[in-house]
Image 1 (cartoon, one colour):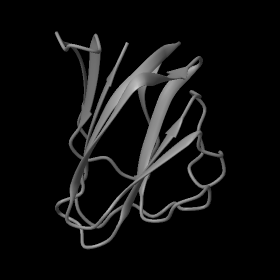
Image 2: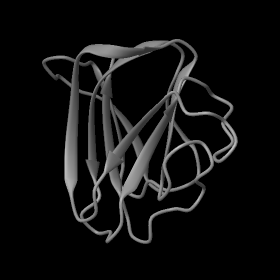
Image 3: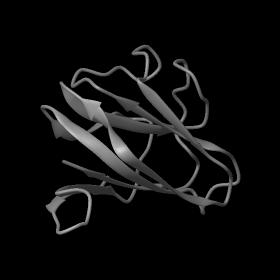
Image 4: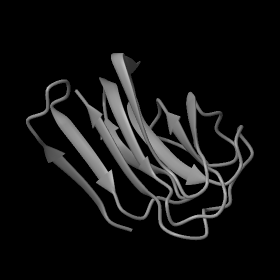
Length: 120
């Protein structure tokens, strides 16, 4: 899995995390507090819905820890979600991509999902 954190000049965020193979294993985009302003989720390679689950935590057990936010992305689709006022997180920003919404899903998509997060 390739996860990269970069500081970039964006009009509404100072940092960006990019994961070209997001899956069912929880990843940390950021530790500490911040505000999420944009999600770019590319589910083009999958024939089923992918749910990007986000947590305001650093200790995450996918399938057990209740997500703070869930973003569904239809099959064979790329979606960009912009959040002008942002979603504030205080502990850290964790995420996982799975094929079932809600808390219980633990199955990774069958093909790669690219996740880009922009935050301060």
